[in-house]
Structure formats: structure tokens, C-alpha cells
Image (tube, rainbow, N blue to C red; front, side, top):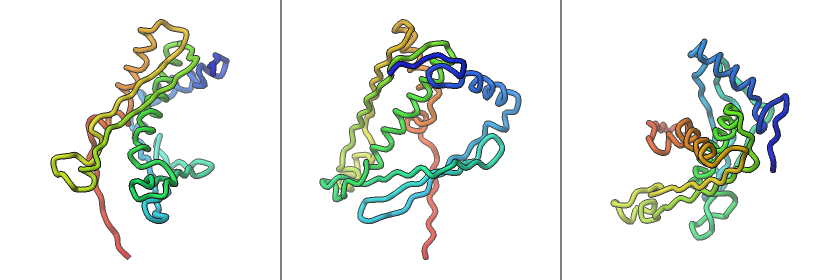
Length: 189
């Protein structure tokens, strides 16, 4: 798939709006505060469904025209029904999606036309931790690897620099590599 440059933008990115957003946030840093939200409902077994719609951003509450829904489950070997990717696989997708979106924005801002961007993300996990069988084994990924294939109208060094800058600005990469405080409350019926 080849991206084209038009009056509306580059690589499908509205570059004028991108720069206008940057200028607006520089002028009013308080509008940079966002809060994204997700809800989740158990279906059966390990199958559950997430829904995303409203968020707070740019100084106001926002809603989308329709909900985004996605299922999560485990494969049969992990006592699930395979009704969706595992939550850990959703995390791999979130990382790839965040890095890819950032790469497209950065390429567009730098005047680079992209022809193709693909990535493969692998995560190594040891069930001994999740199953509580070995307290020395962590519950989550032990290592994650991302490989990008980027084709565009710039030399290889500039294309690699797009990935590097996307990694530097990626919210998901930051959460995975630096952690974030998480609080969990419980309400019972």
C-alpha cells in the first residue's frame, strides 16, 4: 500500500492539523491533559469484552460516534474458548499500534512519504509465574521484541530514525518500560 501526499496531508496524516495541535498545546499546556477510559464485562470462563468510547481531552469530555468493542480470552490449552486474543497479546498489539501511529505522524511532519510499514512483535512469558508455581518467575513478559520493516522515500538511516523517535514518544512503550502506578478498588454487590 502506497501513501500519497495530497492537499489534505501526507501518509494519511493531516499535517496542518498536527502542527496546529502542537502550537495550541504549546500556547495552552493545560489542554494537554487527557484521560482515556475502558470498561470490561466478563462473558464466561476466561472470555470478556472491553468497550471504549468516552475520554477527557483538550479541556472537555469527548464521545465517539460509536463504541469500540474487543474480546479477550485464552486458548483452549489455557482453559479458554479462544474467543479473542489473550490480554497479554492485546498488550503486544497496543505497543505495535502506538509505535506505528507515532511513526506515521513523525514521517509526515518530517516530509517523508511512506510506502509500507509492518511490524512483528513477540513476547516471551513463562506460565510458572502466572500459575503461582515458582515465586522467582515474574507473571508478565520476560522480554518483548519488535521488528519494523519500513519502506519510504528516505534513506535507511532516516527511516530508522522515525522508529527511534516514535519509541521516544510512545505512551505504550513508556508504560511498558517504566511502569505506572495502578490502583485497584473492589465494589461488591
